[in-house]
Length: 288
Ligand code: ADP
Ligand code: MG
Image 1 (cartoon, rainbow, N blue to C red):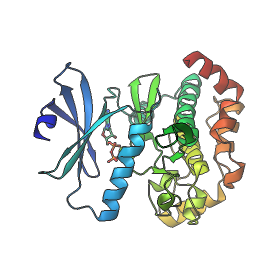
Image 2: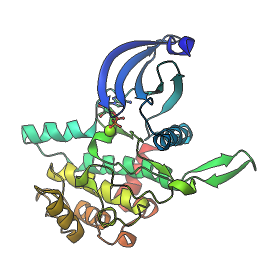
Image 3: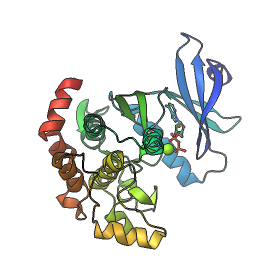
């Protein structure tokens, strides 16, 4: 493994992950700048290690222009560290974009909001409805993946208008039956869906709820459900009363946000349904 880690030159630390730092690295072979997430697995339980392996396997198979590209994983057994090498997103994350607009008191233009929505719907569609080739039968089989931790911090920017979904650290593959209904309390409570709060099972529509929260926040510059305590936040989320958007935003954007934030998960649009929205369809054609 020594030789493998030496294929990258370590540069600046760019973030702090839950299990180690994220660093910029230079690939010696061609000088390309990449990001390297460091995961110290020494103190992990067997269950956590299994989850880590499944995260890496999920990432390996997820290829989409709006999903942060996984390059390879390098294991350093002596240090008990797994390095995930991925593409470097130099424009930071969506949380920073929102914070900057809030600090300067400048609203985000609606065209930009639609563009981000479209790109995230495409990324989620690949997660929820993607397929892989089954090595045993050589045929395509569904490979549904739930992100489970959608929030502005986990949406990365390649440039102002180009975003990629990242940080699949809590994601689960639905094809792995043991992880099919993970009911653990994870994620930032602000973006947590009603069904997760009532400890029902997490499904694709729970990701849609969190997407609704992100798109709302792009417009209002604050999450739709805010409260001082965990308990009153939970109550607000379960009621699902979405505050009015600032007046400059159209009813179309308001309607799509409200649809994604329906308390009853079955009434929320799927990624398929969202791709049929006129506005999203037209931007998608532009992106292709
Ligand atoms: P965690 O699971 O701990 O939240 P993340 O994967 O979200 O870890 O990374 C934490 C932070 O590191 C991010 O919020 C971002 O600032 C930075 N970061 C992570 N991956 C990348 C990347 N591919 N390109 C640029 N910055 C990144
Ligand atoms: Mg993160």
